[in-house]
Image 1 (cartoon, rainbow, N blue to C red):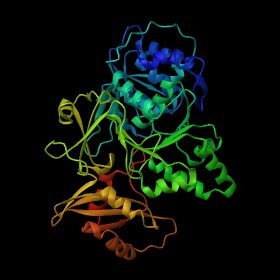
Image 2 (image 1 turned 90 degrees about the horizontal axis):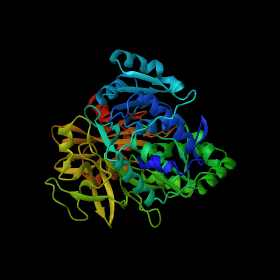
Image 3 (image 1 turned 180 degrees about the vertical axis):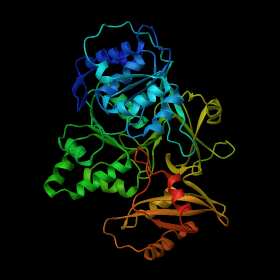
Image 4 (image 1 turned 180 degrees about the horizontal axis):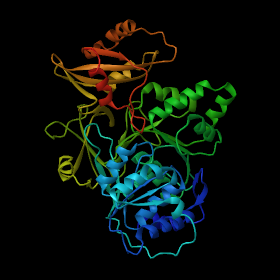
Length: 499
């Protein structure tokens, strides 16, 4: 039996989900997920790893559908609520989905795909209505494939990352141990549910321990602050972009409301940031507002979480800590040889949480591993027994004039300028330097900074790098569904402008 489902049977009447749909118990989840499983199975005994795509807002129906797919022996393929038809169609067809489960709000978007490709479409309005004959559900081995998450990637089409129930169990129990999750926890969920951060770190960790997961359909700064001000939450996890927006909302509030906002944060035991590099300036501003020194961690869709700053003890700005329980980490050079502390190297990860394969792509799977070690493609350095991420090879690591330069380090330096709200640093091909370092800047509202004055500042501030730099002022930076800046799109901005 799937461990998550087994644990839910011991929690029955405890509150599991609070959302726009109301408050639901673990027993409600078990009943509704059995309805989904019965509808998917029809007259068959086991889906035997058929892929089931599903699309619905964050809330009870999402969880019941995910669990129902698993209980029927299927592989869950969550879709992104923000994606247009071409992206949804790619995932559905690449995964070879035999059925699509959808909230009625998405019926008009998904029905043409289902009809064109003769894929069964089930709406939750039908699945969760009426009485149910309790079906005989299959005994699903934990070694079976459980989920396919599609990576945004930096080049080419997204790859399907396949995890087993054993992989998910290892990822969850590692975080439960490290961050001391308990049944008395209450967490606010505002992250996308087609991404490992929202699915594993928040939702599944909460449900594993019998905690309450309070789910908002989407992120809105005022709605989040309203829930924080209720002072009944114990954990909060978000990406840096969300913390930036929460800071902006706090700064616009009157002094009385700011006091309530800060008090709500003080009630929590842990606040976490991940999925992108956290600028030190944001960390420090959030600490001043909330009293929390954000816990940074490092992970990927393929491995779950690998590194984390400590729950207790000192956390260092700009570092992502040490390996989590059940996780092995090493740094290697371009030849695959281990490097000494203080020397940059690619992060490689081993452990039971590492994914099984890229769906229908054995060549990419083989390239991703060096023996049993997964090659992350991220460059880091080990300093004082803590890891510091330098950036993604080929994206954040810029090869200019024979040197390897960390785009993340340059971004951190630029963000120290008081007139800069956001920035993205990329390498763009250059005949003289190999790659030229280019920075796209978003200014603070009502800033009077001129390009010439910033270039003068940057020439002195970035002199340590001894590199040629192009500056491009932009109003907004291109982002993906997780709010992360898409570096290839930023590079394209430079390629489309004058040299």
